Every structure is written in structure tokens, then in C-alpha cells.
Image 1 (cartoon, one colour):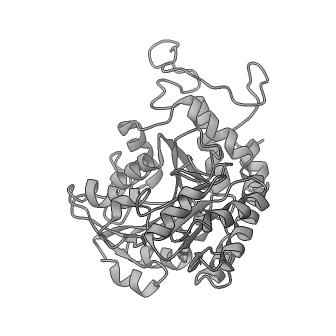
Image 2 (spheres, helix red, strand yellow):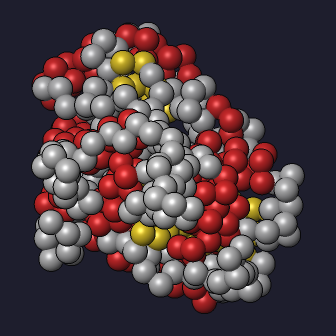
Image 3 (cartoon, rainbow, N blue to C red):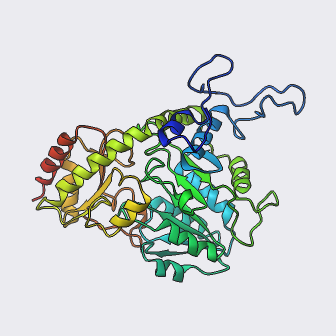
Length: 400
């Protein structure tokens, strides 16, 4: 089985990079829990394997599968989503460069950009990515090297026009990176819409079981570094630059985490169908509840990005956010839920509830990316949806 794009998504997710083991016939790639490999004479590498920071067969299977499901030229696995982001930005930015980022980006991404890369000499501008004119105005030709988009965004579920932003970025010599974590490759493939590289926290929907931490980059075929930038190996090829930085920085996943992500990927298609269906039902329930002041879900006709999401996605996802009028009310709802577990993260089989202003997005308090303090974020899991709706109804009753 190959990563042939004539196969459907689920087929590629189950088979790409996962040929039967040649030694035993095992149909699942083994966990190569090994740090180094015997050489047949100096430089005589068996299959190219030398040291597991540079490459590991289990990780390689995951990377090939991720590239196949995203329609990319190459995949790269990392120890976390932020490790993937950091590696990409270090590969594509230099002191004095400029980055455009959405004003509703994930708090951890903004912290990396503002507080880690900022002192390194990287400037950034946060804009509403749904406003193409604002994106274009924020790009500084010759200085802007990367436009960073999340769509849907975390936690406000904003939708960005990938194809339109790609056009503006490319015209300015910048590359477009798209965080596809919320949609997952089952619902959206940004590379096919013009993005140069896709970013994932594989901790979330790819893994799907809240039992691993990981990240990934998938690079488009032929993607180049920003105009004027040469990679460490002397080429302008983005794939080569990312590969060099992955090995040099070494923030790679262990074989068992790679194996868990590969296992999760096999069921991603069917899980996302259920996540989407249940999230739509939950969103519809919340719209009609008297104690809910706003519901953010791309599957609702009232969502400003609904039509765009319907065009560039194959489903609206399993994330729902809603507002309840005050921080105290939001805390009460989070505390009263039973099936929705109060916890950070998302994308697992179990449903989670959280207060972004105090939890996942606490790092952006006081910035342009600050989120409303009455916003509640749900990761709708795979439980019986009637039970989830009843749990939310009971939790909302806790509002005084």
C-alpha cells in the first residue's frame, strides 16, 4: 500500500507508511524503542538508520502517513505542537523579520511569537484574518516572511480564507503556515488551498485519546523558504530547511508516542464524523438556551464564516465555544458539568470543558488576543450526544 492520492482519506490514514513488517509480517509497524543502530562498517547504515534523533522507523511511518493524509511532500514529527511551531519559525525567520498572526490565535502560539521570538528580534502584527484587506495591510513586503493562520481558530472558531491569504502572502514573498489542529486532515487540507506548510498538535484529534503529546509539520511539494532567505544547507527548499532544523534542534517524539499517533490516525475519519455530528447537536441546543448569550460554531448559519467553512472544509469540527454573560457564570458552568471534564486540551474521545481566559489562553491576558472572560470552550467527544446535552443543560442551571 502506498500514499497514492487516488485512494480516499480513510484508506491513506490506515495504510500509508504502514507496510507489513518485512521480517515478521506484522500488519502494524513495530515500536522501534531504540536509540542507535549497528553499522555494517563505518558509514554502512542498514536502511539509512543511524541514530533515533535523526530518524526512527516508527516515527518515519507516522511522518509518511501524515504527509499522505495532508497531501504534502514530507511530514515531520515533533515532541509537541509548540516544538513543531518553534522549529518552523526558526527555520523561516531571522532577526529583523516580521510575522503576521491572527488576533485570535492559540495563546501558546502567541506566547512563543511574542515572548520567545520577540527578544530574538522578530516583530509581529496581530490582525483579524477574516478581513483580507487587514491582512494585506499588515504584510510588510520584504520584511514579512511568514503569515500564520489558524482556521478554525482557538478558541473563537474564526474562519480564515486560506486561498486568499496564500495569494497575498505569496505576492509579498512570504510563506503561509496553517495550523490545522482544530479541523484535522480529515476535514481540511490547507496545502491544497495554497498553504506552504501545515502545523498540527498531534496531541489533539490525530492522537484522539488524550494519551500522548506530539506535533507535526507537513510541507507542500515544491515549497520554498521566504524570498531572500537561504537555508543552512545552502538551498531555499523549505523541506530541506525543516529537516535540518528537526535534526539539529532534536525536539522529536519518542517511538511510543509516534506509534500512538499512528494508531490514532487510523480511526480519525470515523471519529471526526461523530465529533462533527455531536458538536452540531450541542451547538443547536446552546443556541436555544436562555442563559447562553452567544454560540461560536462554524456549522451554524449565523456564524460569519459559515459559508467559507462549508467551501474549504468537509465538516465543521468538534469544537464549540459559547458565552454566558459573566466570568462568574462561566466558572459556575465549568464547575457544574459532570460528563464534560474540566481540563485543558481537546480532540479526545472524552468531552472536555474549559475557561480559556483563565486556562489555555491565560498567557494572552492584556494583549490584543485576550479572550472574553465569560467564554466557555467545549471539546465535544464521542459519548452519547443526548447525555452530553443533558449534562450541559444541568451545568447551565448552575448559573444564578
